Length: 127
Length: 262
Figure (cartoon, chains in turn purple, yellow):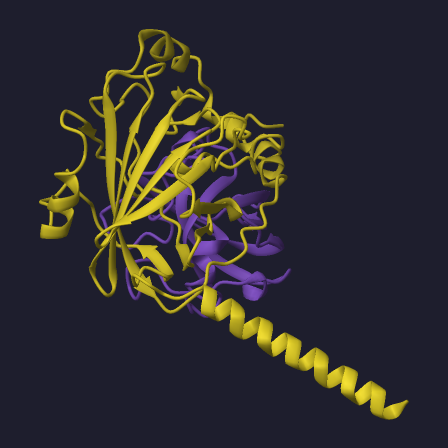
């Protein structure tokens, strides 16, 4: 499932480094947000940016293979993320910036498990 | 024979203990800047009013220097150099700069120089010794050695992203002078300084848990006059983590699926 919405402010997981080296605006619409739900197929928690791959079944039944990028794992690790945050087969809901070119690519700002539990601590809450 | 082994082991332990004690004795925390520091949230001057310590350090920056408003997470968009008069040839060259190349396997893990890296949103850890101050950056695992017992830059020092740094204390301010830097990005938007850039930094505690750092740098080959930045760091009870950069992450971006990508 894919939802789009405008950015009204609020907490942005990657705000600290979103504009740093390997700039987010190159690939992402940093002022827009989408929500995408799917099933994890791969997660690599490495600097400079972690990569999460997941499958999405669109409303028309189309199976889409998505790629999501995070801010630096160095930053996320202090917010409770780790390589164990995602395992293949996990159902997740991701909020983030849509790609500039409309491809199945996003920059994660917040991530939730199937039961609604947020993964890690959002930026600006305790750090 | 058994007695000999015990004596040898005891001697080794004593030597290790003596060595550890000696190391501690040579690395006193003299000025209170040692420790883990993360960039304080929020803007720094000129995007807000300066605190008294910040104002005192800004007053020590060379008169006429351009105080850049991009310290921390903020970055200037393409073509914006924060009021710095960048050479026309570099402005022209920057028009063909392609930032997506930063995710290329050959460039992803190449660290920016310390001028850019020190003002980024990553933590630093400072170790203060008698003859050295060591600054470990979490960003790209950069390690800076500040020679406190040297007063000049060697002519033959190889250029690098961290350069050659000499330092001294002026009262409560650590002054660090750096040369021998490889050409590197000024703003992450296509303009680079040359290998002749000269960096002067000041480190001063505003209080036990707040470290203010200023940069002042000149490079006649890339811009007129002096440029400056000011950063504020907050003390934490932590260590910097290994960065351990993976150069292949950009391959996943490049191979993304979706409309127009098949």
